[in-house]
Length: 460
Ligand SMILES: Cc1cc2nc3c(=O)[nH]c(=O)nc-3n(C[C@H](O)[C@H](O)[C@H](O)COP(=O)(O)OP(=O)(O)OC[C@H]3O[C@@H](n4cnc5c(N)ncnc54)[C@H](O)[C@@H]3O)c2cc1C
Image (spheres, protein in one colour):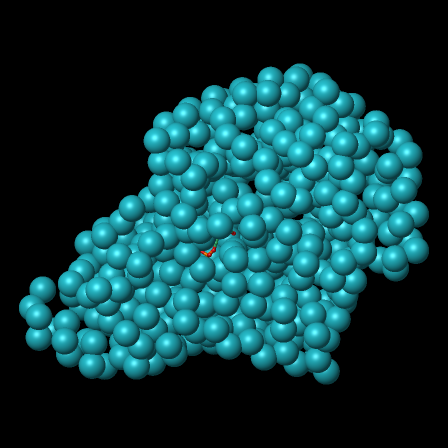
C-alpha cells in the first residue's frame, strides 16, 4: 500500500488514523481479551458516519480485511484484524434519551454503562448485558440478554432503527418501514451486514431494582440447581435470576473467611415494586439452604449493571464456550458440579442466563436471533490475569463443555463463542433463519467485505 494513499485517506477523516509507526498504536490495538493479540495495518478512529463511509470505501478499494470495533469486548477479538483495517467506533459516544416517546438514540461506540447512565435519569432502561463496560453494538447485533430480558426481551428485540453504512459505501436506515429486511438481519445476525453508526432503542421502566448476589457454599449447589431449574417457569417475568458456579473472589469487600471458597451464586434482579420484590426474594431465602453471603437489596439499576466491572477489568485472559440449554437433568447437574470443583482460577465461571418470558413471546423467525425455545444461555469462561495460565483456562473450559454439551441444544449464543467453532455450529445456532440470513448477506454484502465476525457467507 502506497504511503500517499494512506495519507490521503487520513486527511479525509475527522477522526485519527493510527498506523504501525504511531506512538499510540500499541494502546489503540489492545482488546479487552488480552489472549488475543492482533496487529492491524491501520486503525481508523471514526467520529461520524462520514468517516465510516470513507473507511469502508478505502478498505474495499484497497482489498483490506475489515474489522468493526464497538466496545472491543468480543471474546475472540473480532473487533480487530491482522494486517487489515479496523473501523474503530469507540469515540462515537452520543446518547440522546427521548422520554416522551420512550426511545434512546445511541452512538455506535457507547458501552452499556453509557446508555444505562443516561436512561436511568428518566427511570428507563434497555435490556443490556450484566457488565457495563461491554459495547452496545456487538452485544445488540448478536442478541443481547441481561437482567431485564425476561420482562422486556433481548437488546435486539428493543432495537427499532439503525443507521448503517453498507459494503458499497452507501448509507441507509433500517426500520420497520425502511429496509425492514435489514433490520430483521441486524436483530441477531451480528456484524455481517454493514457498519451500524447509530442505534435507536425502545426504553422500558426500570429505576430502583431489588437485586444482587446470594451466595451458597458449593456443597449446597446441587440443591440450589435443582430448585433453580423448577423456579424459573413459575417466577413472574420481572423476577430474573441467573445462576453461577464460581469462586468467592479473594478481594474486599468479600468476607475474608470465604475467600477462594467455591460457590454457587444466584444473581437476583426483581424489577417490580420493592415490597413485591422483598416478598419474592424472601420466599426464595426461606426455601433454600442458608447462604454464606447475601447482598441482595434495593439498588439503582445501573449499580446492578456494573456490579462485576471491578472483577473483570480490561486486559485479562479469556476463553469462552457457550451453549443454549433447554433442560437441566440431574446428570447434567452432576457434570456441572464435577467441573466447577476444578475451576482453574479465582475468576473463572459458569453462568446460566434465563431465556424465556418476553424472549419466548416472539416467534423464532421474527428476528434473526433464533433460539427462542431455549430456557438458558450458558457460558463457561476460563479467565485469569496471567498469560501463562492460558492453556489451563482453555483446557478446563473445553473439557467442561464436552461433558455438558450432550445435555444441551446444538447452537450457542454467538457472543459466547470463540472463533474455533466452525460453520456448522453457526448454522445450528441460526437454525431455520440461516438461509434467509445468507440471502440477505448476498443482498447487502455480496462480496463478503464484512467477514471478520461469526461469518454468514452470501448465498450462492
Ligand atoms: C465481561 C463480559 C460480560 C458480558 N456479558 C454479557 C451479557 O450479560 N449479555 C450478553 O448478551 N453478552 C455479554 N457479553 C458478550 C458481549 O455481548 C460480546 O462480547 C459483544 O461482542 C461485545 O460487543 P462489543 O461492541 O464490545 O465488541 P467488539 O469486539 O467491539 O465487536 C464485536 C463484533 O460485533 C460487530 N460489531 C461491533 N460494532 C459494530 C457496528 N457498529 N456495526 C456492525 N458490526 C459491529 C463486529 O462483527 C465485531 O467484530 C459479555 C462480554 C464480556 C467480555
